[in-house]
Image 1: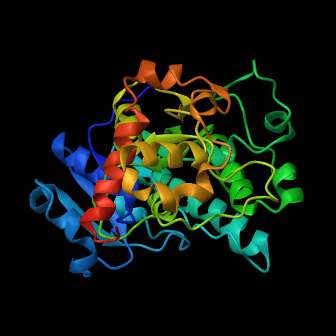
Image 2: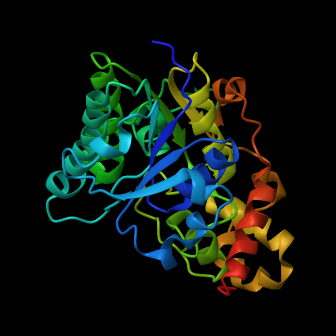
Length: 334
């Protein structure tokens, strides 16, 4: 199916990517319906409610992701649904019950509501490179291998190393595509890596906190990880734009890898040391073994050509990091 959406219903958490999505959708003249835990929490939602156009074209609903039918009213009458948020739980006593099952059920609940609506023509699903990078294939790739949308995380691989969130994202994304085969809408997924850039909300999300952690000299222990937590970065505004272009382009289909550059935390630390020399001493734990030659060598080869064809021109990572630091300074965290 090929569809061009005109009215958007977005599952909002007031979070990093979702906030930028709301902002950009309103700027483009869309009517936006969103879901949050508490629509009456004006303080927490101020960054959304004060956006230009919000009073006229933004409506926020209370909805529980795990409650089937809670999204029926939200998506009814809309052309497109953007499912941007999911529960993120890393540690669990019962990983399947607490992480995998909720991720799949939450996604299915949104898709079932979209199917009931009779108006939704496309669902844009926010996946993650957690559903791309975790497999024996990725671990054993050669320097010439190019990672693209065809690469998938192997749930069995994740099970063996205890990466349950990554397993959940993979199973949920595959389930979304499978459901769409018999649905009255198609599914397009945006697959971002570690997202950085300017914050609209007043709370610090996980990926921005990674930059803050590096600047504070708090060392992350990853000696036991087969694949480091952060090996690629992208700007939040590019990710939000990708969702909108995927919604608007009738020929958009399948997955879109949102990766601007393949970098590690050590790369980011060296970049921060250059941009903010006052933090050099603090950054030393993350600068081990990092020099110019290492910095200029990508962690792995990848292709974001499909995303570029969609219309996304990726922001240089240096600019994205600057915007992250400026936001942290604005929040008096630095």
